[in-house]
Length: 198
Image (tube, rainbow, N blue to C red; front, top):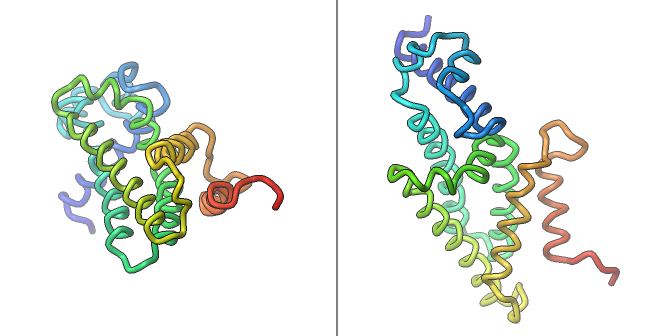
């Protein structure tokens, strides 16, 4: 039999998953503690046994997700893979995040500007900078290695990659015609080879 601590942790994860779904669907501002409690089948007061506010909930949701994502990016940058392979791995990991953590990605995409008005979410701006640094490093390494064009505007290219990858959260659905890996590979083909006939 699982012990009480394990059961409590599992229930906490369930509550966070429910909250994440509501924040992604309705928006953080439009989701109330009562909405989360009702969806969880508990009284609003019972939710406060686990979290002191919905801000604490979204904080934990985003911190956990981003620690995992940036841990993967760090591992890619630290690997012995070549610059082009590292770039491809980062794109695949990003689409995998959309598949595995759709709600978390949607929350960050849709709510970051609002959340940044709270002091406790200042780290989101730092994560934005860290993300920018990851992609600029990948692109610059590729240019220096001669596997990417040396006339690329790396800032513009970074913005193109960022916006075209993460906007996929608005249309990608698990179980669709293509898996997230297939979409990532098609995206890389378009990014690296273009869409014109040779």
